[in-house]
Image (tube, rainbow, N blue to C red; front, side, top):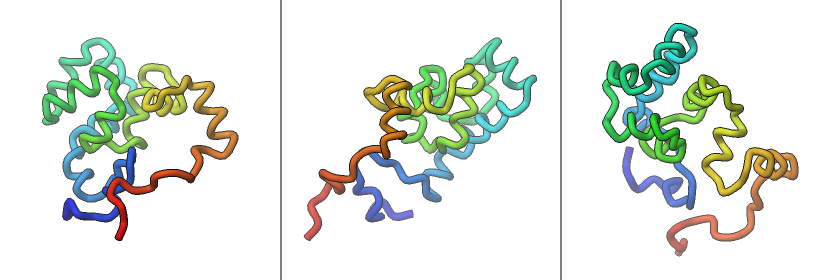
Length: 129
C-alpha cells in the first residue's frame, strides 16, 4: 500500500489497512492465542517467555510488555485483537482504550456517552489545496 494514502493524513489516527495487517500479523496472532485459557495462563506466568515463541519484532514485544496500546497499533496491532491482552489483564475495553488518551476510564466512558470527541478542529495534518 502506498504511503501516500489520503487517510494517512488524519492526526492521531492509524488506519488498519493491508500494510498494517502485514506488519502486525504475528502480533495479532499472538493476541488471538489469548482466547485459550491455557495460553492466557502461560502468558501471565512468563510474559517475555511466551512472547519469544512469536516471530514479532523486539519493538512489538516490548510494546506488549509495556501495555503500550498506542505503540502496538502503530506497529500493526488491531484494537479488536489487542483487547485480548487487556481482557487477560482483567481490564475492560474502555480501560485499554482510555490508556491511549489523557483521560481516566470513567472520563473516557462519559465522553463516549456524551457523543464522542468533537468533530471540529484540524482534520488533516497537511493543508488541503
